[in-house]
View 1 (cartoon, one colour):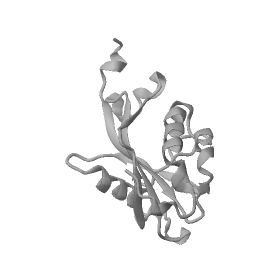
View 2 (tube, rainbow, N blue to C red; view 1 turned 90 degrees about the vertical axis):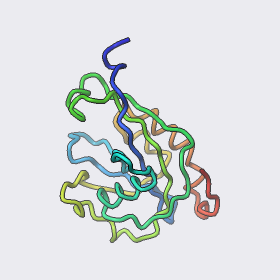
View 3 (cartoon, one colour; view 1 turned 90 degrees about the horizontal axis):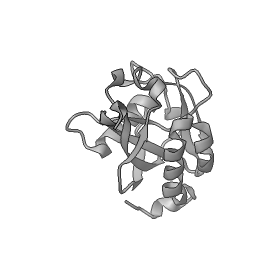
Length: 167
């Protein structure tokens, strides 16, 4: 067993934010010098419920939590950080993340999205995209995870799918 395998996963959540047109929000990280985009996500604070966390993370990262939860992964999903960057992320304490993902219907307007709402912004830009294109936009080590998320929640990106509340 390698030392990498001895490290724990950081607990977190992810948000598939779906607008009325069935498009999904992605954002570009400030700290990643590439053209990679990701969906909002973040760590769970001690004692925090994952559903509370996803709403807090949306408020912090995009300035609004004007949403309705319409789906949730049954299981926790994981990804490992590549060895070459592991030491520089989370002070090298984690091998990757173990996440609970949520599909959320965005109830607001684009004007509510404010990447500078929090004192420590994480993103430099955002856009709405077709859900199935997201794995091609993410950093390579998260592509498999993002493809699994697309497979799980694709049916919820169809207009009117919010009537199909799944867990």
